[in-house]
Every structure is written in C-alpha cells, then in structure tokens.
Length: 143
Image: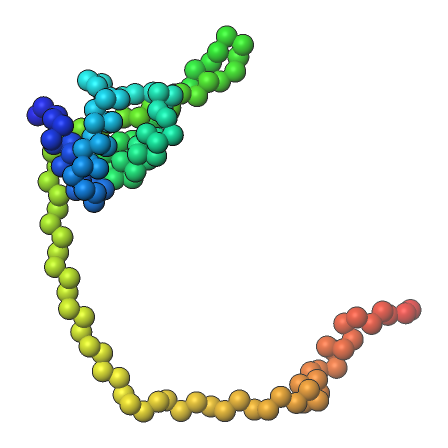
C-alpha cells in the first residue's frame, strides 16, 4: 500500500464530505494526529467534536468501528469500542457518475375516464339489506 500523506487524506476527505480544502485540511490533521502510525484507536481518546467527525467519516466509509468485551476481576463485562482507519479507501478511484438521462415525456389522453356516481346514502336501505341473523348475534338464548 502506498504511503499515506496528509495531501492524499485531504483530497479524499474533501471529495467524500464535499467540504472546502481548508475544512478538509483541519479534519485530515485531526485524523492523522489521533491515528498516528496505527490503524486503530480506542474511542475513549476522542472528545465530542472528534467523535462527530468520526461518525461522518464512518458514514463515508473512511472509518469503521469494532467492539471487544473484557471481563473484569469482579465479573462484570467491560465494552471497549475501537475506530479503525480504512486506508485502502484513500487510493480507490471514485466511480464516474453516469450522466442523468432525459426523462421521456408521457402523453396522456385529454379525456378523463368516466367516473361512476356514488349513490346517495340512505340508512334505511343499508340496515334493511342485512339478513335477520345479523340482528340475532347478541341475543341471549333462554332455555
């Protein structure tokens, strides 16, 4: 894998996050400072602002998280979260976006389909159309 430079990281962050070069430089310096020569860092070293940046970078595929569990001497589980730097993403070529296709115009007939008129509501008709058994479902039968 080629050497990771600040310039390569700036270009990737600028492309992935769609930010200015100065903002990408600030983000790249934070990433380089925190990771150093490692591929993985523990989440506990991040402050709130750094963590928000890392979530953005994770959404773009530059970072991912993994988690380990350790059992302490008193028997409780201790969860440890790590951030892993995806260095190979820096050297991937961005796929070219296809040109947007022109939408074909759909020609519709000017005549509207005939709409069947709704008959007027008459409560007497509705209830008289029910069978007699519909009215006997709640009756109690006396023997």
